[in-house]
Image (cartoon, rainbow, N blue to C red; front, side):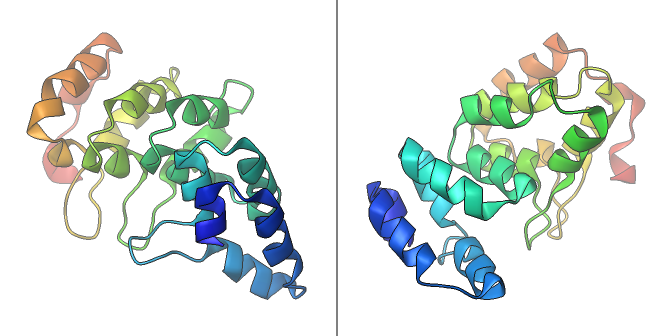
Amino acid sequence: LHEAAEGGYTTIVGHLLAAVSDPAKKDYFVHMKERFERTALYFAEFNQHRECIELLDRVFGDAQRRVYDAVIARRFVKVRELLGRNLDLGRRKWLLQWEDDEGNTAFHKAMLEGNVDVVGPLIRSLPEEKHSIAVYLLKKNRAGQSPLGLIREDRREAVHKIITDEEIPMEDLSTEEY
C-alpha cells in the first residue's frame, strides 16, 4: 500500500483497500506505519498524488492523523486547508493536540523536520487562542523535549520571527511547567 501510494498508483491502492473487507482490518491496514512511522497517506501527500490522497482520505477518516501526516510531508497548503477557518475553535484545538506514540504533536514534527513553512499555518490556526499556541510550543513529548527545544539551529531565527510577528505570549509561560 505504501509503495502504491508513493508511486501514485490509485487503481492499485483501490484494489488493495477493496481486498480487505473487515472494517477493523482495513482500519489497521490504512493506518499501518512503515519503519520510519510514515503511513501510505504520508507518501501520497509527500509526492502530491491527488487521486491517491482523496482515496486514502475517504478511508483514513482520521482528521488528526491527516494534519500530522501533512506536517511531516511538508504540505503547508494541506495543513492550512485541514485547519481552515471553517472549523470551530474546539475542533482546531483537537487537531493540534493529537500525539504520535512518542508524544510528538504536529508542532514537534514541524520543528524536528525543520519545516518552517508549516509552523506559520499551525500557529495562525488559533488566532483567538494565542496563549494555547504558546502552551503547544512548550508541551514536552515523552522524551522531555518541547517543540521549541527541537528547532534546528539554522531554522531558529525564522521560527522566532513567526512567533514574534504573531504576538504569541511566550513570556507569560514558564518553561518549567511544560
